[in-house]
Length: 371
Ligand code: SF4
Image (tube, rainbow, N blue to C red; front, top):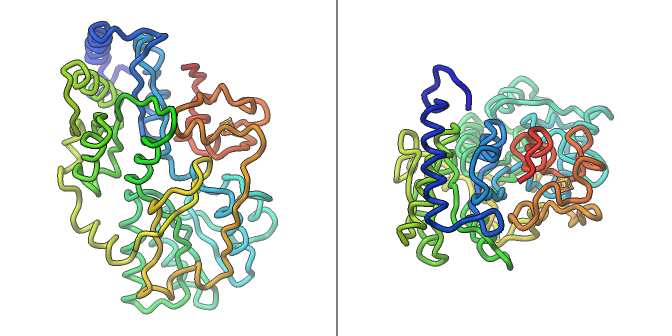
């Protein structure tokens, strides 16, 4: 924790919370050999935990497991190969968020395709891509849409805007994924060890709390929607331990200053207007998960890059020894992967968990966390 003006990083409050977490763990009889295991679903929380050194100052009876909530990390190689194929079409200006540039495909990343001459441009929002389409009417501008419900509304609103303005040379390569089937897949993983979930803050701003209720009612696990400051995470850890201590299982909202219980109805309306659920979607390291992705509705087919370009989404096996799937489901620690820090580093990633700063392997590598 850092001293400074930010009240959510206050050292003294942090110390008190850590002491109270220790008391709870003692009451629960948790030890290093028999810890309480909490999974942070969102890569933003993984980043907070390591950046602020939380795993190093918390008692050994608590173990963090790092979940599949970094959308860059779960992009399968076949979809990256599709991106490269679209981007190498000479008619195309391919636009993407910067963090997807280095994700390895089976032959090359978007960064390498750009070095080879493809017209690939980094943008900060889908509206930037739409503006490029306006300014380049003789080119096909494709936006690489990815992310959970957090980024879906802005993509959906951009497609609606393109339709309203009759922009014919803009399309979306849709790789948006949904959080609820993903959590269910984690809960259904054989050997699942999660005692409670640190719930995603940004996704919950859109979907609200209700969709998480099945975690408590069907799987008997608590979840606390959590903010991204270190004290947010510490408070949520205490709230989860408190539930376990009291023998209750609930969905709670630690991040109420930002997350409304009912989510954002306007954002959900935009999502529903433009997207429909896919029967299944392939995830890097996790395989196919039913109803875990969305596609563009028929009404907006002319904005769908999958229909406008030859997209094949080939199934590509992960490299030998890669343990990304185990890390994503919390059954393997990054440092247990034989490639960690050797063949796989942030400078030369083999798996996508080493690419994004929100990926568990990149966080372990950068901050040297060992548990
Ligand atoms: Fe995947 Fe690399 Fe992490 Fe191994 S070290 S699990 S290959 S990202």
